[in-house]
Image 1 (cartoon, rainbow, N blue to C red):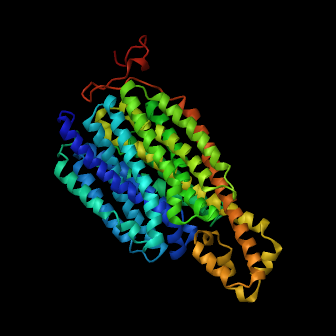
Image 2 (cartoon, rainbow, N blue to C red):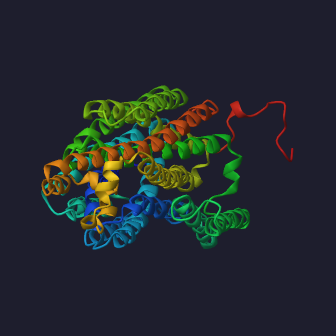
Length: 540
């Protein structure tokens, strides 16, 4: 597709960006709406799973589709992904329980994996590495734009309409994206045939699912040293070893093991994994802080998170343009890493005294760090690996980033809930304990001790009005204690994100910079900078 004229390429990119807008808007719209949805459906203990299941299914699907699109072309996969995503979005809006929502979000994730994997690979088909920076920056800006619109739109919907419209409101965008791809995207044959690596896809799923369950249940539902958690980790380890064994022998492996001999591939994906933890952790838990601790409505919390996304959009576009113009990608990655560390540190300082303004400033800095970093990793990996593995390498970058988000969110959710319970046990005032011990509150005490109550301000006000004035003061103490406990729980989340962002920055210094290729047709060979001229090639 590199030979297409500029106008055709631009039209194809518009179609791809419409597809990404649809998929990413469905992801970002959920954040501010979910606390209210959970308040209606129940299931605070499954809060993180609405995100986690999406990342899990999209990660597994994306990896397989990356290889299949290399073999059979991109168009059928992006069309099928859009169709699957629309069905999942519609069904999610019909959910009657939190379990149904998790299942339907998993279906959305399958479609999202198709869309994201083929979208980034298509950019590599259309443009050489030297030109990809600006386009991948624009794709990052599309994701950022959806992240600007999504939180506000999600909050507005749950405050003013039924929450199901959170998942239905942008279905028309999906229809438009489907028609644009159908009409504009050329049907291009794949570059290679061979058998599909079903075994590899099954084994990578068998690795990710028990790993995720172990991190989600460890320390909450089961003790870390319990038989269940040890078994899950054991199954994950065995599946990983079998996956490596199968990929070494596969004719067309889902993830060729030879890629791990490439230093740029390894370092970039390590950074992506750690950045994924920080990114998804901050995006997911900040709305909970703003609504539960600051006491902001869902709509207003969308406005509070908006500055983070605006800075992400701007810095992503700037990073892509600078990389394309200068041909250098390491310094934007380092800059993004430094800014992200600063932003994550500021999040750890938030308390019950934090205002919406302070939270917004902190999030602007986090967004800037993510914006500078995100487009770079994909570009570095695509530039350093063979063009005929474009789909595989593109999907691998997303896979490691999403695995980081998936595992990170699971760990953070466990840490948050554990810390909340510890805080409540140790800090609950005696007056509040006596209040909760009243016979008339026997069936309500557990609900009143749940921080989930904090995100439903109308319900809080309703409960308070039913109490006698002397008891209202005790109820206020209970709410203050719940807020303190929630802050402590979220603080543990942000500390993890801050620590891992430091590690990601240190690893970024190891990222090797090689010249960006100016054509996809150049022969794939090891860059001169990476070869020792005194060493003869093997076999010579």
